[in-house]
Image 1 (cartoon, one colour):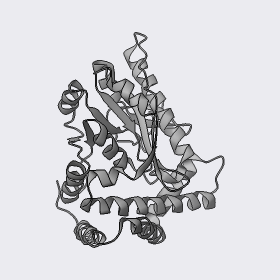
Image 2 (cartoon, helix red, strand yellow; image 1 turned 120 degrees about the vertical axis):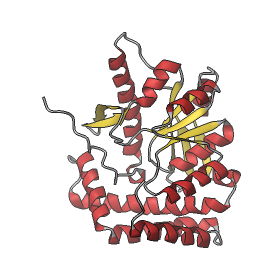
Image 3 (cartoon, one colour; image 1 turned 60 degrees about the horizontal axis):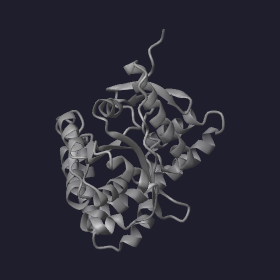
Length: 300
């Protein structure tokens, strides 16, 4: 990996100072402080603000003008700031204390049904609400691992990995070297958390997302097809009362028509449709700053 830039050094050391400082404060303060931080970032980071607003406009081109999209973008950054400070505070908490933030659970029977098959479960989720909290909850109930992308800075990667493995009790499988670890975990009937809502530029297919073709990860669908593992969508979102709730949806069954690629495409389309439904229900809780439609389908 290339040497970190000066700004990356500054961000890393500032983050460590902030984490240390937050550890002395009550957890109840994190949301308030984090939301204030999100407001500040939205005001100062004009490039990120415009990118977030532009992506919202792409999705809601028929219903939102730029001013309305920017208003939603502001809410997105405020929510993200609150989540960021809460996650930073987890560094000095236990798994039990973290998981206790989820006050309502719906659909857990879908997870129990999937685990009963003894083929392993691929939990499909998105950068929505607090996905890190979702992983912690699953790990507190059943052996769970997570697929993760290497971060841009090795030091940040080590910091986040430490949090996930030591506080949340979730072993990491790094994307790109993941297949063997995934297959071993599924043989043990483990749950595997995978975020499948971003354009990674690899191993994907085009399916509709907000009415536009979006390059979407298909690896989990292919693994489920080969191993018999269950595909179960799940999301942790902040409800109207400000409390976190977990939704576990019914398994997405893979159809088998004899045309393998067509079946994979249909599976990816179906779990992307579930993600879109949740994003539409909680639009201020999704990572709109991601360039979801970056990869374009080839022209005929």
